[in-house]
Length: 114
Length: 111
Figure 1 (spheres, each protein chain N blue to C red):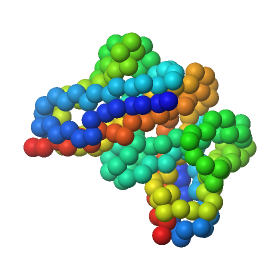
Figure 2: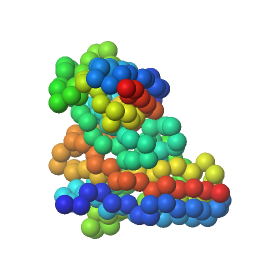
Figure 3: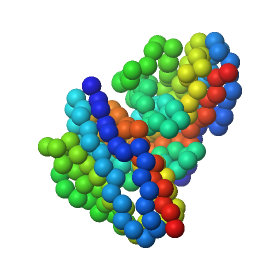
């Protein structure tokens, strides 16, 4: 049983560019949450997708957007990249039928903005 | 708003016991998570407390007091591999997860 997978593992972009990160949830999970983790900090909640809709959002600008597909996989898009967007981006999946259960995290995508 | 406080760093000796504290002030509360995160890796689930009291799982135990907005993670018989960051996180939304993480406590286990 594959866990949560993310691609790419690492990414280098320049300021002003756009980036798309991808996540496949654990088998049987239907909810995907995205987090940004700066070095030495805890993960910060970006948004959560369920039934192909964004149903919760953290304190992130509209430059951050996402999508969930019918197979529950998800994408995170960031436009007009800033240096401060450099971070580890984590995807976590869970099952809506057990809303208080643990989230399973993927290995993350390390984004560097130059 | 959401505020979760943990010590930044702790050091403990192999074989000893260490307690990592977490205090929280959140606009809602529906449970508290503890995660372990080794450097360069994703967080892995350790425990989830919804009700007050102590929950034990092997060498790790987690305690919650909702009235005090307080939790701790207790690690017994420390091993070198326990050197990692420990993240306290609060689920503040009933029905589905809206999880806020603390900044994490970096634990160093020394021989």
